Structure formats: structure tokens, C-alpha cells
Length: 276
Image (cartoon, rainbow, N blue to C red; front, side, top):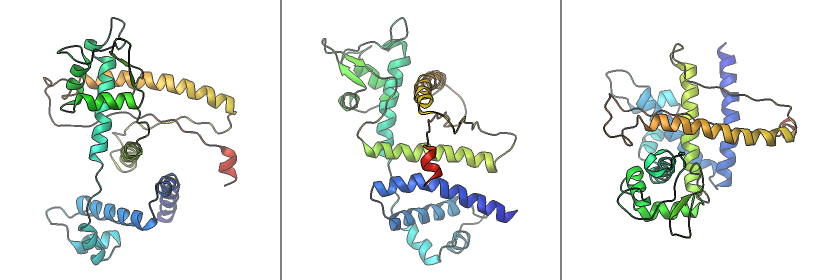
């Protein structure tokens, strides 16, 4: 049984590493750099999550758990930690501005559609929108970003018009790679919970897939997915926003939790899968 589980884990890791290594090689990251990152994560997880209650985690115990030498553990603990907080914050702020523009009645018409906003003004302006949903970030920075990625445009009357339903980084590989880290980590965290967590409290994890579809059906399916998935996400966005303290500071309640739902489309050419 243990051998079967080891084989299953090895096969799963092998499968998930393929797309990751593809990204790493395209971005010019050699194995040595990836190896150091993997060692760092092994050391961090062993230190933070596999200690003995009431006792300080030691280098020797981390070495035993991870299979790394004590010298390697000490070296890795001195390495600087990679940080993409600025890119993530940039993405989140732009996404929140667009979401607010689409759902807040101060920035929508009677039909609930986003209205064209004057650039300045105390209420109902683009500056007001940014202040409400993006904190202390300069209005010009958000404006330039939305214009750059084509999410907004300037009208003949110098108002700003929203052109999209969601923020998708365009041309910024830093943001796109940062999203890779967040989204894949969220999915793996859910899968890990469902494997090792409380069986009476599983997290939602479902998918639908068929493997003998004609290309025409796939093209049609993409259109359906884009429409219905976006509608569902916007419905959940409205529900969560009404309960988020950053959006509604008057809300009370205990703790601080992060929760959400991710939807992703996938597609594989089975001819390539069968003949690698």
C-alpha cells in the first residue's frame, strides 16, 4: 500500500511539474535556481509545520525531515526570500477598481451597467472610484494601467469608459507569473485539504471534461465557458464584496479570513498526448 501511494505521489508530482518547468525554462530559470527554491520551501515547511509542540524546531530535526544536510539547512535559512508583493498588490488594486466600477451603484446606471466617469470630482468620478477601491494608490497610476491594458478608454468628452468585465494583465510578465503562484497555490491548498484534512468538511473541487471532442465543439465550449463562468464569478464577487471589511468598513465579525472561488479552462490536444 505504501509503495502504491509513493508511486501515486511521484506520478502526480511529475505531472504537475511539466507545465511548471515549461514556464521556468521559457523564463530562463536553470535547475540550480529552482533547486535552491525547492530546498528553501522544504526547510520553511519543515520548520513551520512539522515541529514538536512546545519545543523549538532545530536544524538537526529539519535536516532529518527534509533529507538535507545540516550545512544545507543553515545555508538556505540565510538566503533572501523571494517577494512578489508589489506585483500582487498592483494586480489586486486594478482588479478591485474594475469590480467596484461594475457593481457599486454610485458608478453604474439604472440597469446596473458601468457609466462613463469624469476624471476628477468628489463623488461619482474616476478619482472617487479609485479612492474607494484602491486605497492610497495615485489615481494617475490606476488610470494609466487600465488604459495600457485596454480595460478602459477615454471618450470624446474626456470621461473614462470601462471596456471589460474583469482585469487581465496584458504584457506584464511579472504580474502574470505572480498570478501563477497565487492561483496554483490556492488550488493545491484545496487539494491538500481534501486529501489530508477533515473528511466531514471538504472544500469544493470539481471539474467536467471529455477527451474525444471535435475542434468545433471545443471552440463553441470556450464561448459558453467565458460567458457563464464570468457571470458566476461576478455574482460571487457581489456577495463577497458586501461582506468584505475593506469595501464595507462598518462590518463587524471575528477573525480575518481569505476565501474565494477560481474557475479555469483547460484544453489538451490528445494527438500530442498520445504521441509525446
